[in-house]
Length: 210
Image (cartoon, rainbow, N blue to C red; front, side, top):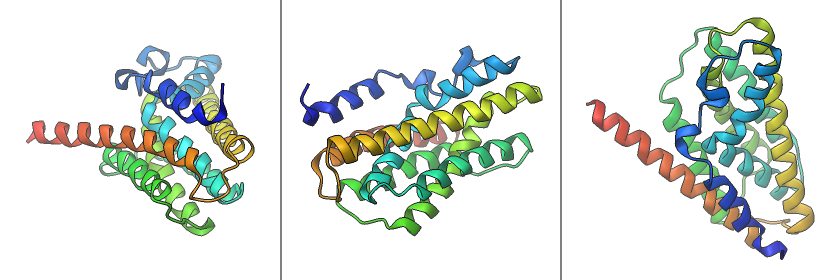
């Protein structure tokens, strides 16, 4: 397989995850033990197509900064904080819309060759991470301490692995060292489509509630 085809392959794999599965690891049930909590945590960033798209963008953003890790680490840490915030009863407004907009914003910057420096990425990824993490928390509400801890570890680890793999692939295989690189912009375009789709779904949902 030629490396130039990899963005299309990644996109095809992402799109095989249907929106109906997006926030329902372990069949939608609350994890009851340590193992179930871990497996649910591992699965959530993968079957949650909106979350997966943003994590891919985090990896691409890291690559376009030459592999700097602070923005990605900040994002993962913020998702953990956001999840715990929901468990603690903290409410965030327009969570799903904000998640979709975060995908659109970052994907748009990459597609159109915009430059997000280390500080800007850290701030944007950190803010977005709070909302992504808050959404993660819906799958663990009501769980005991052991599955909660393993769930946090599971989705934190999975996000790290995905972001690192994407960053490594972009740098080593695609040789993507600038925002003018072709393959990352294709991958970002796929993520943009996902973000727009989810944004439209959320707007339609709000419209039907009126």
